[in-house]
Length: 198
Ligand SMILES: [Zn+2]
Image (tube, rainbow, N blue to C red; front, top):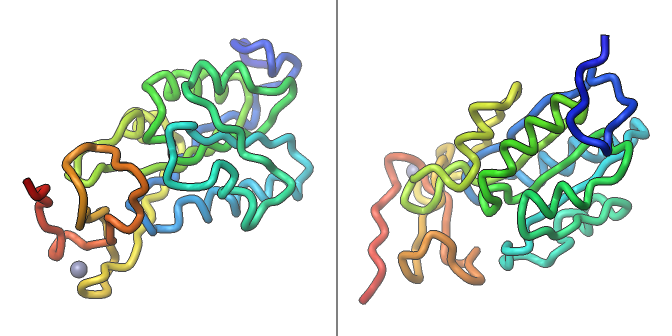
């Protein structure tokens, strides 16, 4: 029995593959690599895949997600969940989203609509900001997802599994421009409260 379809773009699908997967963790934990791995497998399985990134993510090249591992899939930069929805192609089967923490809360609602309509949604993002607060729509997505993976980097201090993105330079804004050098991976024992220099 087909589920009720909520989005025009997937009319005709039976809804059997719909689900939300979240790949969460700190910086340098391999979230994007895991996202690319899953999307590559979907591509090999000849599924229709689309990949999105927030245009507010200025830390990387717009197509960094795909140039290294997945040249055949261009990541589309969008500024909001609404813009992402508008860019979906008819018949898409798998939707990947990188750097999901920079999206608005509408991403969680859209992920639910897509999964209900039979689309496999794979979301990668930072679960916490540098001050260990839940980041953007990630907590909601983590609650809604059928499948959650928490990735870990390697703590630069002790070599243990690192759960946090330790800010080591810059200001106290949640999002910092041009910033991978301003962070390092740290575990709970090695994490320190960052104070911006006045
Ligand atoms: Zn450590």
